[in-house]
Structures are given as C-alpha cells and as structure tokens.
Length: 354
Image (cartoon, rainbow, N blue to C red; front, top):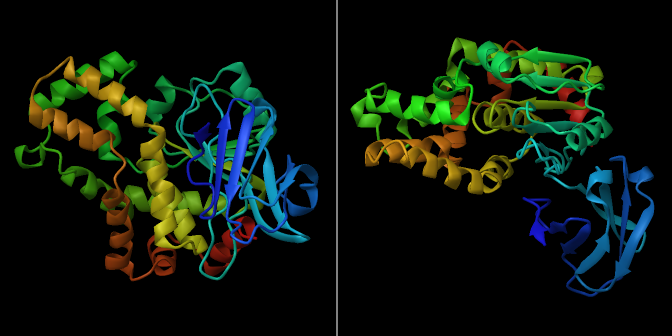
C-alpha cells in the first residue's frame, strides 16, 4: 500500500485502491476503535471500521466515494481526528487537505476547510465529481492572467467565487506563457543558454529561488497578493476554499505556509507540509529532468533546472526568515505589511481552528 504524505505525527494512512491501513501508537495494547464519516466533525464520524488491541487496522473503503474523515478512540476517549491528506485526483497530482496540523496553544487546523494544490485545468469527470463532494465554495488562484487564459480551471458547480492573487513571481514567468510541456522545456532551456540568468546564479545552489521566496514577503506585488488572500480567508462564506498556482509549489507553498504560521502552527510542521510537494512530484520531476536533458547537455543549466523544480526546505525557510527580519513576527507582518486588522486575524483563526 502507498503511504499518504504526513497524516499526523503519530498516525500514518496507507491506501492501495480501496484497500486501506491505518497505523498508530498503542504501546500498552489498549482496545482501539476506528470510525469514519464523510463530514469533518467528530459528532458525525460514527460508522465503525474496526477495533483492535494492536497498533494498526486494515479495512476496505472506496477511494472515489470520499472524502472520508476518521476518528480513533481508546474506550470512549477520542485520540485523533484525521483525513486523507492527498486527494485522489487524476488530473491534478498535488491537491491536498491542510487540516490536522496542531498549533502552539493546543488547537488543530480543521480538516475539510482549507485545501492547497496545483491548477485544475486537466481534471477528468471523476475528479469533478470528487471535488464537488468536497463542496468547495471558492478558489484563490495565484497564477498570472496569461497562465489562467492558457490553462483555465475546469469549472466546478459548487464554486461561487474565484479571486486572482498574483504575486508576479519571477520563477513562474519562464513557463507561464508556454502552451505545452514541450514548448515550455524548449523555451526555458533556450532562455537559460541565452543568459537570462546571471552566470553566478546558473547552478544548483538555488540562489535565485531563495531570492524569489524572500520577495514573496518584501515585494509590493507579493504584499498585495497575500494580503488579499488573507482578507478573503477571513470571510467564512468562502469556505471550504482551495488555494493554488500552476504546480502547487512556490506561490501556493508560501501562501499555505503563511496561513499556517498565522494560525499558530509551528515552523517544523509548516516545513513538513511544504515538503510534501517534493514527495508528490518526485516521479514528475524525474520525467521533467529527462525532457530537459533532451534539449541541452549544459551541466550548469541542468543543475539550475533541478533547483527550479525541487521543493527544498531552505526555500520556504527564506520566506519565514524574511518575515522575521523585516517585521519580527507574523502578526506584525500581516498587520503592517499586508493591511489586515486584528479582528480579521481573529476571524481567520476562528474559521479554521478547532
């Protein structure tokens, strides 16, 4: 069975089609029960999947009939509420639930309220059915207008509003105008070989991308985009919502990290969430590097491209450090840099924390 990326610190979820397995800590061999439901609320998760005195349970549950949410109990005490983080979509590989992360004051980000992902331009019919069961009310799109025109999202009947929050990322520009992967590969390689990137940055160090991640915090387009995002999240009628860009890595990576940071999630789990993208895109990245290699044998160019498609901890850490350097803490950044009020911050926390 394939392990779901980072369910909870003490719980792992595995799935192979409709066959599932959950593992958990049970060092004393206490009686455990696992329940499931289709709504992310403890009182509605009542259908029992099984009981055990071991540290795992296996069961059958149709993948496409989800989303599902689970409750692990010891006797009558609920030990954990959780969902399946990665959504089983064919046309978007990086759409996932941001629930389950814990805050420093003991709260948890609610499952089924906030999603992050890649663009929704290649969904198939089964994907649409699944996402409409999620009951998304809105979409936050970090892509540029050109990206949206070239690859429009598949329409979902439940979505009432989509807003554009384009931080004008320089990393996204190289590929954003390409109409196909083949054209994109040729264009990026040609531009790099022509000197679009300074020679001292044309390597695998990721220097250019560290700069881009800092600019999410410091640039005016970044402030406008992510300020608009947070103000949108402060309105409960927009939930559940999905934030996404093209691949769900850089712009979405920072948007998700900023939201979790404001909710009070610790930096370790924020980075863990960010790095899920590397695991999800591992096969795709190998394929992409093979395609790039068909157009160039320049090692510096290939190293740069590897750094471009990688999801590295130091990238998102550069953003988090920029917040610290420029503002001291996230709340000051959000108020002074992004223009939110304390009331809006409190409303965001009420919207997503349980």
